[in-house]
Amino acid sequence: MTVELHNSVQDGFTRVPLEEFFDEDEISRTEEASTNIIVLTSAEQDLVNSVFERLRTVSPETLVVLADRLADLEKLTVNIAHFPSLRQSQDHGTEVRNMHTLVDALLVRREGDRSLHLPSKAVLGRGFSVAKFHTFSAMEKIAAASDFPESILKRLRRCCLDLLFTIMAEDVYLNLLDNDTIGIDIRQDIAYELIMLWEHRSDETVIKMAPVLDAVWNARRGLTPAFGTMVGTSELLLLTMAMDDQWCHFISSRMGNEDAAMAMEEFLFGISWEEIQKVKKNISEKKVSAVDGKEAAHILGRPYDAFKPKTDEFEPRDFYLLYSVRRDNARARLRLSLPGPHYTLEDHYMRFILETNKERRFEEE
Image (tube, rainbow, N blue to C red; front, side):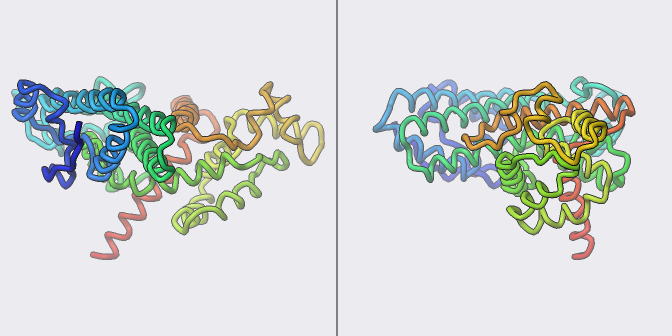
């Protein structure tokens, strides 16, 4: 089996050649349909080709399995393509729906799950993103088990994280749309960004942010929380020292915001805001200056291992699980008007990036 780079280009990205994975009838059906969803970017296709070249000699049967999975992704996009593009105007009897009316609908604040208010292509496309993540995650595990060069393993892990951050970005965008403290012009920009993510299932803003968030998470995993005043100053200092100028600018400009500061504290200590308050209360009642990790674990009824720095290889799905817990807690506090952070650190960082980009464009004009 040969996997070669082809020159077909769609929206600036080369598509993976799947002629070898489909039979003739499937090929004709694929060519009849079109979709703006990007199956593989040029970088992803180059990586897939490198993996397939090695698997051809190491494990041909595994190559066939992965090829089938990629073919399934292609067929999934063909099915999604039957739903209208989110950029097209559609006549619905007495009303016309287009990209601008979709933006207006997204800016309407809604309590609860938005799923039934979202376009079908958006809901189906998320399934494609999850399936694509699973495909590359499986590829990374196969490559690791087959003793692939570290350079390829790093590229596969980077790809998995980019896909994970793109999935996470959808949650962040939806959270920010409901944030009334953000200017309407920024929220309109967010709505358009979200629509483009739904349309293509690729987001350049997220791809640029992913290395920063990845570095932040890895730096955090190597920290041992210091349960002293519970302010987290030492942890923040250690974390910031490992980061780039953009992250440092975010810290210096946004930590004066109470919600951002609470979200950072929750992120740094790896426990909920409510649990942080419980430890703080215990410190105050005992009139001590600090408690160590073991004592904090005892107070919260948690195993001490939860507070130790992590040295093992980070599983991207764990990243999303930890984020989703903070996200759900923040949403609950906001809905019930409870104290504590109403937005996650990732929400605040994404907002910072979007507002900074808006300011930069305004200055250039």
